[in-house]
Length: 510
Length: 92
Image 1 (spheres, rainbow over the protein chains, first blue to last red):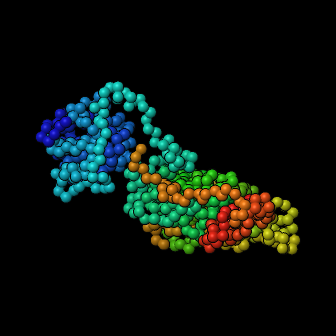
Image 2 (image 1 turned 180 degrees about the vertical axis):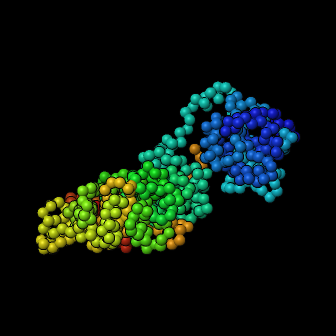
Image 3 (image 1 turned 90 degrees about the vertical axis):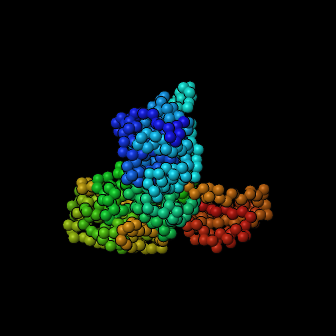
């Protein structure tokens, strides 16, 4: 193997962008740290990630870090992305003549080459001390940063393998990281993104991964921010969504929400997240067409990340501690944004006590949407009656009252009808409340499940579905065309079930 | 694949194992803990009769305030203190 003082043989390899790069291109401006790596080698991947901390100071000193991958360009590109490494990368195909010319025996092996093409330092495997020595040669005071062991051995370099071994390695079934996630039980039935340490670190950003949000019921696994970031990676979130994910988790773990009970129940209720404020636009959430239907990355993945927290960290996986008889699609993900721009009223965040301009996440224990069409009514009194009758069927048509917060998602078209009549949001809630009233006689005549209240009342007495209009929670969302609104039916009421919780998004003024 | 961050808290996965199984219910103190679901009483009355008459158990009753939240510690501590076996009785 080449050692200090040896002259490096000339070579030319293809970079990830397709350019041909020669040794003289790399050392023309100054020293070059050439690192031979291979994706299936864990030490190689760790080294690639750690050396990113040298890229900027090396660049400032006229030097460069160069990864020489013993993989094809597609694999090399994915490796660099996974490791967060943004320095130059080239690929060397079989029979790995350049590695052989350097005498490489293991990967990773690094050669610090000066502008004359002379080797000045060599590191086999990983050695923090040796890499810090290299860093200090380029610019005093710099060192490799980040968590890493002091030493870690590497793997056999591909140029040391005979033809039969190479062929066997090439024909062996590649490690399938997607199937690995299924085998570990880290999914909700759909493929997930493996939560590698570099991905989790990028998701955390400046957050302290060791900070705990507390135990997640019902299994009581501790939710560190690192574990939350892992769930966010699994779900497919981008790092810019993480503040919303953190806020959603804080809301979900608030004792008032009662995640424990609403997970264990045989009911179909799930976690519904409603987002308000500037963060919606900042991260690209959807509050328009198909607002509650997924197919938008932040909507779909934020809701999914929080379900994974409940199902994995909290062990509330359906079929184990989640005992819902039927379940519903919202148990994969249910997160949407209020269409504040189309709403004639104050946003949910204001109604919940937060100032304008504050981004919030509200969590609600709710069922799948029960949509209702009203395309023929022109009188707002008729439209609200339609919506009220739909709400009256929540939980069970004959259980009166349910006395639980119930969310009504009003479409922009319906909202415009009410606004044109001069109705405020609270007036709409009052009219929904009033429109739900039924006589005891009528309730008893419907048969089916009867609550305990009707037995003690006179036949002509009327009951509303809720104990107060305050339990009717109105939000506006959805596309500009389509006279549909929806009820999100609640879980049990009378203070026994769950209370809606709203929290301000981190970094957003409260 | 190495270097993954698990979404699980592995300490919880190794938590308390199940209690040992009784060889017989005869003479044993069995508590029926109602979770306050509708019609629980009828179901538990019949269960109590079967356990006492057909298995010789000494049966007592307990109740937690609501089925929507875990039992308060004072309820679970009391039940544990006076029982050889506990049946947390659900009804749906």
